[in-house]
Image 1 (cartoon, rainbow, N blue to C red):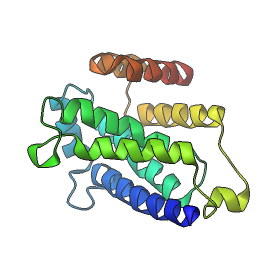
Image 2 (cartoon, rainbow, N blue to C red; image 1 turned 135 degrees about the horizontal axis):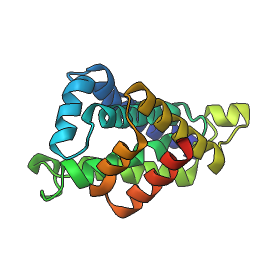
Image 3 (cartoon, helix red, strand yellow; image 1 turned 180 degrees about the horizontal axis):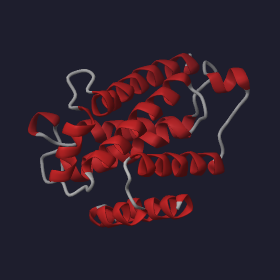
Image 4 (cartoon, rainbow, N blue to C red; image 1 turned 120 degrees about the vertical axis):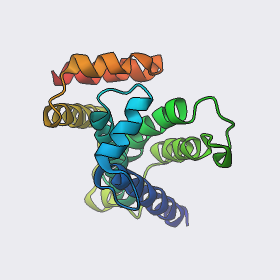
Length: 185
């Protein structure tokens, strides 16, 4: 029953995260795509906005997909935490917690689910169990560096631009980004 419960949670959380990312990346589900999302990100001080829209979108979409399938654990749920922390601290900052007041209720709930799935594992009903795989810390770091490097190249963004934009982020998030970007450069 535990594995069935984890499968249900992974499919719901992963599916919604994929949809959330698809809004940013492709304009799916009445989303604004990379241009509209990028403009919104720039109003919060995240420059260049299109780059950060793609970082958030691919983290949500890719993390959701990996979580739903239960493959390369714990990369999937961990990939979704960063954009949810940024949503909490940037888009919903200074508002009451409840979503009907514009607050961070949803991203905080998503963070809690992602952390719980990271700690529990994907369960027996997962591709990791079928193929007997598990992604270690080095694999996660390489994935993050590859994503960052690929997005910087695709958007013609220098690592220094990314680090400058990150100055307004929480210190722990900024320190992790600096480590990933320095290894990708």
